[in-house]
Length: 326
Image (cartoon, rainbow, N blue to C red):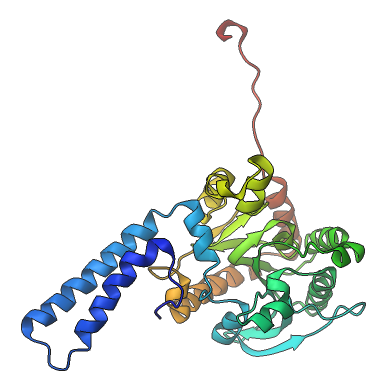
């Protein structure tokens, strides 16, 4: 799948792909042309691998925000069967930034919760670009409570720059809604799997991010704040966003090294926006394995493991300095 939007570091690859397309479209290619086609394909793969293996954290952010990157609705179509959407928070309205519903994953009944940004301008406005309001978080937790009563596993897809920051959201209890979700999700005695498929920004991501198995797509990020927000606070200018991205350590590799996540889900060479189907296949395999492992854990141990998992975040050791070495 050729991207419609080209990132700066992808330009050399796209230029070679365009040359390759011209050669492949020749009606009767000569033996030398066929050899050139083979060599060019090898070179494109080599270049793509070399570029994507050495991406800077800010480059990863750009990949995670790619307009062609698969979103929640894409994954619903590619991964799940018999998806039945559930609407509303029974208090205010139906927040389209968070989609919920029952579904089947290879015959396994699950409750699905996912943040959706939207493709078209109209859809993005309806979804608030993936920034949920309090009613979105209330909708999510209400449906999770129902899944717990039925003994269904919960799968959450995270893709948001953050919770909606407007006055109306604050008036309706944005912070309380997120905090309430954190508390309640920590007590559900059913397996919860959380996947960061794109952006995992701030409390907006954490509001559906308490789970037994936390995984991040290879070119996604999971952070307490966006790099632009961090740069604005620390350096008073978004021009330092690349510096902030490096300092935040929010890429999948850094998060795994720090013990914040349990798994990195690989993406096709060149990123998920290159091949939605292959990305979904990799993600599906990871979900099925995680579900199988978690369903083998007794419920009382499941809750204890979840509690210990989050209590161990940020653990450090203190040591009293020896006076002789000072």
